[in-house]
Image 1: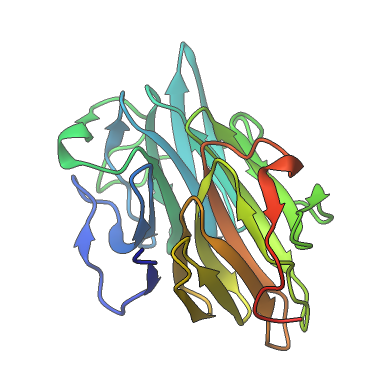
Image 2 (image 1 turned 180 degrees about the vertical axis):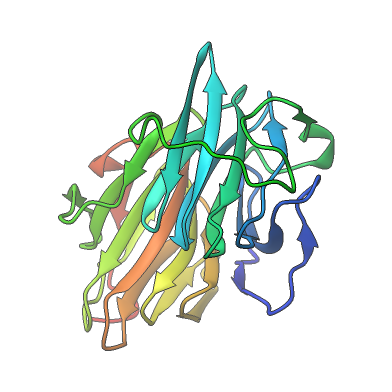
Length: 266
């Protein structure tokens, strides 16, 4: 089984259709994608209309705003570091970066992105190429911030802060303190995509056929955890190892992870 390990390149791979963001491909699976996006300071994206795709944005740096409309409700929400905003299938949405800072964010797409599923329209409060006033009206709707304390401890020992989800998948912030080593586990029914936000570490993965590999984790690195793969990770730097986890389908509970023997490290 081929296991993915990717890290961000310097130059963007493409621009989002209709403009508005630089795109750097991160990692993908049959159920969904993680992509890195940058909306430059002062830029405004066209209004997205994605009836067949669930999306979420997790803000890594910078600030901006996003307008969303779904089932007769609409709101403008601040985009700031540590915040996840969700756009379930059928949501119309438009985002922009503040005038002084570029907006950097991780894009979750489920199922995997295809150009024929992307549409734009003329809805939304802002005009592309113009700076229009619109103050935030709702910072809670379909929005989750990384909390100060963990929501739960994962079966592998890491701290988990939940970031919401939809029927196809859920998002979480995972933290492992310096020097800590997770317990080796294997998932029963879900697969995951990981993106490293900060810190350094190592990840050991073993496929069902017994082949294994160790990969380095650093900011911008991304990996997959396919169903049936045994894994263990550790924080090797001076700072916390922090990751964003996309779980597909959504995490069902602590019984999902099965203890998987001795692992690579103790």
